[in-house]
Structures are given as C-alpha cells and as structure tokens.
Image 1 (tube, one colour):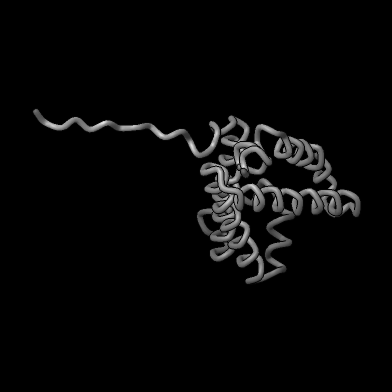
Image 2: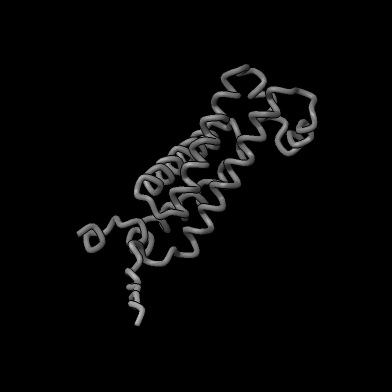
Length: 153
C-alpha cells in the first residue's frame, strides 16, 4: 500500500487582517499612485498628466518653484507609500511604524499649514488623521501587527 502523507495546517502567524488595516493599505497604495503620477507630471510640464493639477493649482505652483527637489520629494513620498501599503497588507511591524510615522508627519503639516494660513483647507485633514491614528492605537490593530505583549511573547 502506498504511504499516505498527512498535512498539518499551521495556525496563522498573524490574526486575521482587520478591514480598517486593509482600507489603510489601499489608501497608502492610492497615495503611491498619486504621488508617483505627480512626480512624473513635474518632469513633463504641459504633458498628458498636466490636467490633474486642476484639482490643486496652488500645489502645482509650489512644486514648480522647488524645481528638481519637488520630483525627489514626491519620489520619496511614493516609495514610502508603496512600503506602507505592502507593510500593512503583510502585517509587518515596520509597516505599522512607517505608516504611523508618516501619518504623524502629515498631521503636523496639516496643523502648521492651517494655523499659519498657508493652506486653510488643511484643517479638514487634522481630525481625519487623528481618527486614523486613534484607530491604529486600538488593541485589534496592535494585535494584528504583533505589537501587544501577548503577541510578542
């Protein structure tokens, strides 16, 4: 008689990914797409991507004044967003830390921009980012990323 193989299913390394974490991973992926397209559009002024700047012409002006630094900045933002999206989908601790850090930087920028009157509409982002950070601090999310004492042991 042939020998039978027995397959044992190992328990998941992480608990099931919360829907909010999946949504944030998608948000980071969208941020990577937008920042990447914005960087490319700066390299070809008047090109096929130029109409996207109708959404925020003031940003286009500001980036134009920065020259090549704007392309580099948007490239770094794009890479950070790609990394966060992957880290959130995969449940990586470094992804959690990178995402939370990026959101804290975004929050600080929104507070400064709205307080100084540079971009008054940035005030809308303050409570949104604060709620996302509050969600990231929840036990369910921290468990998923292995950041609670029970999961770390």
